[in-house]
Image 1 (cartoon, rainbow, N blue to C red):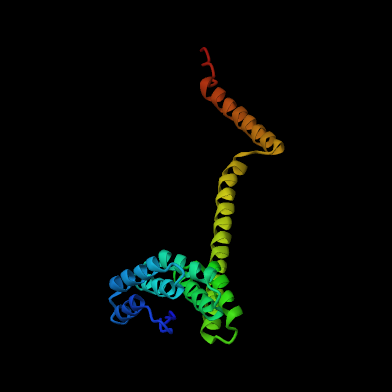
Image 2 (image 1 turned 135 degrees about the horizontal axis):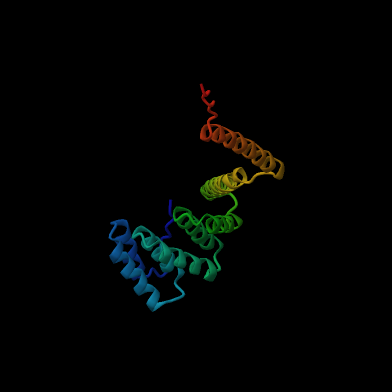
Length: 201
């Protein structure tokens, strides 16, 4: 929810009023043109800046809107306007997933208007979303670390299996030598069969 600021004062600025009328009719391009014109004629007209921020936000120009809200919040001496600018800034930032910045802006808004339930609710939502985001990042980081460890263990495992202890190597060598001796004996028996000589009669 974005807060709007009406431009009714003792000397209403016709250009701002035209912008407000276009905004109400959802003619945001026309409203933006009027608010920019009002700011061009009087750069210190922060109500026009605030309403320009709302218009930019409606036009999905979120970065430009947040810049405008920030400028209004910094320049104004009116606590209510500063609170509303920070509230809208926080809301726009939260919707853009810039949660840490949103939390800061919403806290600023609550410093000016501590009883603003909307600001408090949006602050709580942003803080919950940030916490959830951090938990997901931690979980993902843990999963990546676990996978790296498993991959490293898999790589190390075949190397460990191929390595023989010196005692095992001696045993295998000894077994091979014994097998070779047995094969040699068998081969010798097969090569030179023993024939009995025939008797001479």
